[in-house]
Image (cartoon, rainbow over all chains, first blue to last red; front, side, top):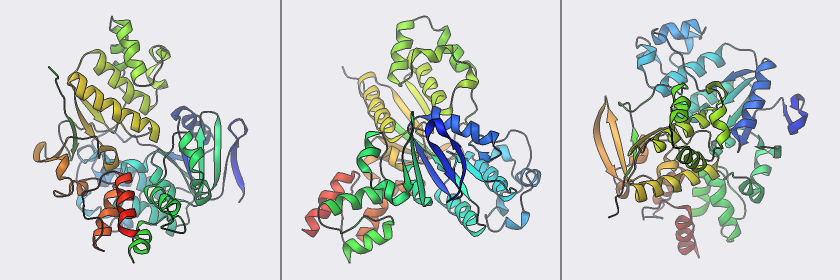
Length: 213
Length: 194
């Protein structure tokens, strides 16, 4: 892993690998995001656009690749006014346009959490298929399972980081700092402690199959 | 006489929706104009903010802090109906659990009703009394908390890993009760397997 950005004060470094960043104080997250913007990372936040354009015109103005309309199931939305569609749809339009037309590394500033599961799936699949590296700052612990690397931030800086699986094993440290665990990890960890399972699980389907086979 | 408010979650587009999280300048200004300083400080403490926030400018406030200040504004103005749009976003787990306890307390002890918009069903479960499903500004369905499985409320939301787990387990004829707490699920699994 090659380090590409860091803030020594917080012992915060990111490398050329997609990473989830969870935080328990918004202020430190905002400070880091501010530094990333200065370093030309593409930061995508949850603000949507004003204006009276149609969805089609918004997509065109953001240089969205119109060939992707079927992939994202946008056909029915194209002629709607952007301001009249739901907030989730407005944000979805913004995110898919920005990730489409960039060569920068992408930073999601607690934005995926507003989208529904299907929208998230389409975005993450596109990112994976196009080998895009992203850094997901999120308040939703379930999203950490999207990436193989995880950093946990507190007000003073990084408290623990590493492969997602290794960080999620640090249950005491995470909970002491106000974090929870993804549901499937929490459940399987307890079942392992009870002697019912022999390891933690990171997929709900695999856990169910193993438990009730 | 105890006056109990209710906690609702609403889903779908409706008159309570805000289009985005644009910060409105008036929130801080409104709080500062309020004369009962003691009440302002109590309300700020309740939402885990310090009195320094009264000195901040609107563009120095994060989205989460803004949501909390909107709540302070409603509390100092004795609002009996409080609307919370994606209030849970940006909150860490500890704070989410804190605010869930706070909303229950304010609802039960002060008769305040909360209308919560979120796509996170895990925030609603064990908090909300009733679910309101809107379509084109009209309530088309209202579902009691005891019917979340029967009426499949979770299908209108995301993030219901616990419910997904229970439903998948039922395909194997396990966990047939309507579980909403992870500890109850753990006890049930233990009973079934040991």
